[in-house]
Length: 249
Image 1 (cartoon, rainbow, N blue to C red):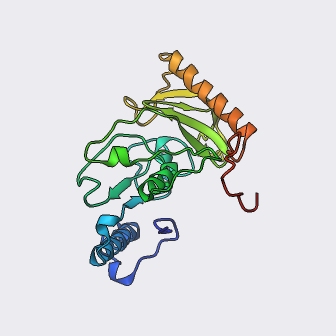
Image 2 (cartoon, rainbow, N blue to C red; image 1 turned 90 degrees about the vertical axis):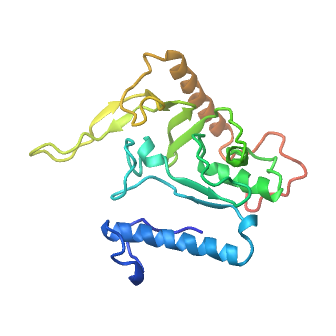
Image 3 (cartoon, rainbow, N blue to C red; image 1 turned 135 degrees about the horizontal axis):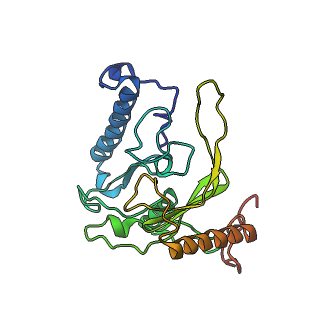
């Protein structure tokens, strides 16, 4: 169920207008909460709550309004403020209430998670980037091995995270507005290495302190780009002969 809000232009239902102390943006967030509660209550009334995993998340960080929680960047960028989003899972009897985890996950993990719950095997004829999240959402969470998480802006790979470290590609950063001067494009900077455990807002490049981690992530980026060049659509070599042909390809 894909809500367009809180993307601008913002609107709210009349009965929610003025309910928050944060203006129209706050009213819209209240409306989203109300909408989710209606879905959850309906599942309960139909006797489906214990058979349904409900996930509430977002596709990117805040744009004009909303807070990135002290992280660097906003929507449209690959610093954590533009990419790290809330993720709330609810499944009575399967996902313990109040469970919190620092495990790293991504939107591409939802497909293998849902297929695993439904007992549907992953397709064997293509690369699947995500993993099943249920082991880390269970009553006895299993700590997953760190894996590369790739950050894209459009079709441009700009960053990769592996565990606590994150590699950011070189790029031109906007300098801002100077008195009497128009906005201009800024300076080319990077690549950087950030330690997200100690520096969650990506303020300090630590590539000189962790050269092996910097080299390791740089190599992951190189291999990933080569893999995409070989197979842009992610088909596996020796495609599964039992798989049905993909329509339109």
